Length: 388
Image 1 (cartoon, rainbow, N blue to C red):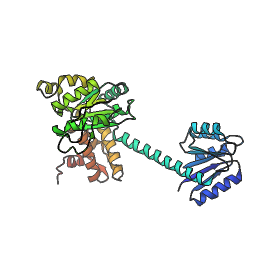
Image 2 (cartoon, rainbow, N blue to C red):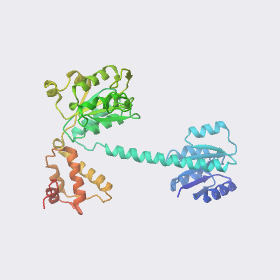
Image 3 (cartoon, helix red, strand yellow):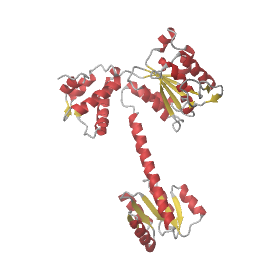
Image 4 (cartoon, one colour):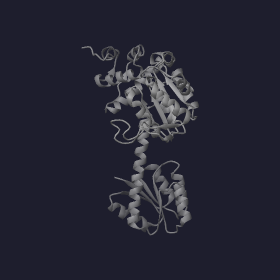
């Protein structure tokens, strides 16, 4: 049940509003002045505040300014002495709306409902952003990870293209996401393309789009990923698996900032930052004729190597505990504690699948272990073919 605080020095107004809001199933608290109102805001959680502007000791504008320093609750300002300037000032300071006294009850109730809906959406957005941020969090304290974080801080605000390389499962996509999140393009789309997962005959349509009728299954016009990422970031994962014909078109797009849809003739301007990643040795691929050298030089303005997990063993206990907390929470379980011997055993494993393999192992431990993770559990469950 939503909880509302009314701050007003006129008792009849407070009483009337409380009766109306109580009828609408809201829980209501009252404050006869701004000082008491702020004390209540410090002591309790409220979903919305109705605040008079003209009050003795501390007026509503001062209450609003002070409240915004420690909470993010929607304020609806009410006043019998209001004017346009006062309303504008209140909105600039963060009030949701301004209503004159005596308030139109229908408008007041609609405004309260809309303010709460907006507040719910903002809170949900914060939760989702936090979840996304946690999903792509870079965990580890090793020199190798710290070096990557330092490079990201320097490179992200620029427009430089980045080529990320490293073994499968090392977290190359995490680096790409952080480069985007810390860039000036963070508000714009982040489009990810797995070049290895798309057949060679479809990769050009995926990247550049196609016109209706350009091939058998092209029943309607489709925008490609370059267009969808306009103003943002296009992450070309596993670019070493891209066909040579698609490489040529990508090179042209990077040179001219223009693309042409498959089956089309019109050139389309695109503003996209390219981040690419690969698990292949592109120098060897160039020698073997599988990758264009000119495209390599276009992409690798800033090369970033993501070190294999076996080469930064000091991060393994930290990652194991991090995955334990997140996976246990996702499964509605309390996180299990590792014994020192168990953590040591995890650290000594080769981890050919890198972080992805470690996460899978921890998930297995969460499901199959009872009260704690012991060294015997590591030897029993770390292999997908569980020993009986």
